[in-house]
Each structure stands twice: as C-alpha cells, then as structure tokens.
Image 1 (cartoon, one colour):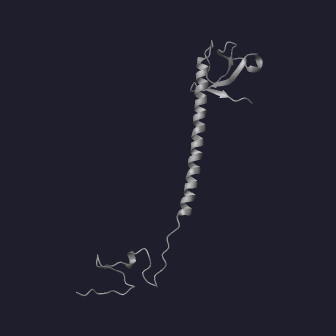
Image 2 (cartoon, helix red, strand yellow):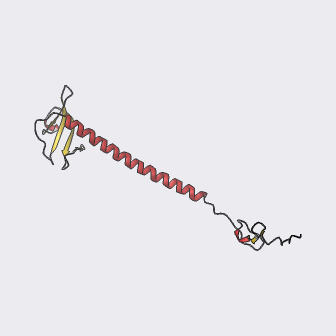
Length: 136
C-alpha cells in the first residue's frame, strides 16, 4: 500500500485526513505572514499595578471611615456614661470634663469659662449622636 507523500508546504493531518495549515500556530510556508504572539506582560504589569493602587486606596478609605466610626462610638459611650443632671437638647453644644476623681461629667459651661479639665466639646445631632467639635 503506497502512502501519498504531500509536498512540504502543504500541511495535511493524517489523523483527521484534513489540511490544517490555517490552524497551526506557526507559518507553514515561505509566503505566509509572520505570526507573532502579543506581549501581554507589560499590560499585565500595568494592570496589576493599577489594581494594587486602587485596592490600597479603597482600603485606606475604609480604614479611615472605620477609625472615624470607632472614635464616634467611643465618644458617645463616654458621654452616655458621664454624669449630667439635665436633658441635652438636640442641636446644642456641650462640654465634657473630668473631675479629680476621674469621673466624667457633661456641662453647658465652656472650657474658657471654668477651671475643669476638658475632654472635649460635643454637638448633639438630630440622630441623637454626639459629634466631637474639633478645636479651632
């Protein structure tokens, strides 16, 4: 039984009995266009760098927000555990002080009008959450 030998520039797959030159990942004759693989390494590195910066920035934002919420929680806990003999009004500013015995108390008197040890000034917002007023 004689096997028909095909010319070198013809790519014939004996298993499938088909010509598969168009399916090869390399050129099969001298006149074929050069096949080059795209260098995706630079693109991957740029993409990795971008996503790393994006994730880091988002993490820093979330971390700052978490710290802000925790500070707000701690201030509210401190104020609700402090002594005061009046009902705070929403929208007003109050001042938190520390007594000699370490006990905290809330007052209407501003720090510049007394000699108590100030812990901070706070604003009671509409949601009844105490917000610290930064010193100016």
